[in-house]
Amino acid sequence: MRRWNGWGEEEIDRPLSDGAKGLLEAALGPGPELSDAELSDVLAAVDRRKSRLPDHPLVSKDAEQRLRASFGQSCADWLALRLGEIGPVSDGVAFPESGDAVRSLLDWAAEAGAVVIPCGGATSVVGHLTPPGGDRPVLTLSTARMDRLIDLDETAQLATFEAGIIGPKLEGRLNPKGWTLGHFPQSFEYSSLGGWIVTRSSGQQSARYGRIEALFAGGIVETPTGRLAIPAIPASAAGPDLREFVLGSEGRIGVLTEAIMRVSRAPEREIFAGVFLPDWDHGEAAARALAQARLGLSMVRLSNPMETLTSLKLSGRKVEGVPFGCVMLMLGFTGEEAGVRQMRGRAGEIVRSNGAITIDEETSLALGQAWKANRFQGVYMRNSLWRCGYAVDTMETAVNWPQTTAMMEAVESAGRKALEKLGEQTIVSTHLSHVYPQGSSVYTTFIFRIGPDFEASLARWRALKSAVSEAILAHGGTISHQHGVGKDHAPYLEAEKSPRGMRAIADMISHFDPGEVMNSGNLIGPAGE
Image (cartoon, rainbow, N blue to C red):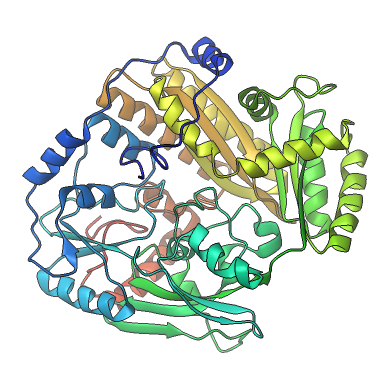
């Protein structure tokens, strides 16, 4: 059973070690002992908010379904659910099983004057699912029952899916036939294909398979004004690419019901290996050289000294000969056997030329295997940290290589200073999770104490979020490399897109949704703001 107020399955637990607890208490102070809100009490509060939607055979007004549909996995979502301060909730949840049913529901919602919020796997970390306030009823349209593989064209290497399919089911449909999509975000276990597309997701092995925009070949969107069908063509010079209307649209133009995806043959060989370099400068130089050499690696992930230290402590693993202050570089080699051997050889030359610390191959491969085994499990630590009185949030961006180090330092500094003003400390660490010849993502994690109550906790998160977002803009980064915009990042989008660009986005949305059926406040904010 999936947790209603945390990450993942209820039966999965990853308790903190005594060493980890000691590290947290020494750095941040003891966490407060707060009691989680009881589900029964929260559901009673939902029940008191009577649904404003008329009855419909596909719409549930069940309190728990309304609750689960109204929250994602952001820090603000966690605080609200854990401490029982839930705010607005959806008036009902629809579970269509076809594109025609989606079409019917959109027409019905328009007649009812409702706002529609599409929902895939409910893993958003930037407020996509938060219902807007106001007098209009809110319908959450779940695509969870739309999870079929419709067609696999092995000659064209295209697979057509219903957009509600989640990561494990998608790969489960392809792998037995010898194929893979190769898209593995950390939320892979629960996030949906449609969610990946409309938020421009990036998977852990996008260096090989491509970000989601490279994999999305075409599909069908049900918009409030009608169906938009985009054919899958290898390449076209026939004007603007209509796929760009869908990519990053975040549910504002309609509901993606089918997606045609470019798939790859399942790899013959896959190896992950850990490498250590003496400091950040050497590590960044190695990561940049690997990206610009275009070797075909499936992953290049560089952890700064704090993340390296934390990762090793949490895993309980000791690596002989690796000094304090070093950085860990995790490399992925995927492909045919001969190609993997060649990549490993050339990558080894590059990291050694940048000062790699010598460790035995067995240890290097063991580090890689441990990362692979836990690649989707680390997020469960959020549950364990909460039990000890600590919250976690992640902030991410992308910049060109000359700005990478300055961005990391600015983001970490902004977060520390924001919490110091409130008398709190933070454990902060950063990694480069996706590298490109041009530049890199910069992904930073903050661990901080929960406050004595909801208001104090929310104030800490807001101070952290706003300070880091401002630092990202000040240093020329995108407000989101992989998490999307939602409502949390919407105030910062104009700095990247420009006022003229924002008007163009608003006009495009208005073309597909003149009645503002989909105006949940994602991307460009609610009407009138």
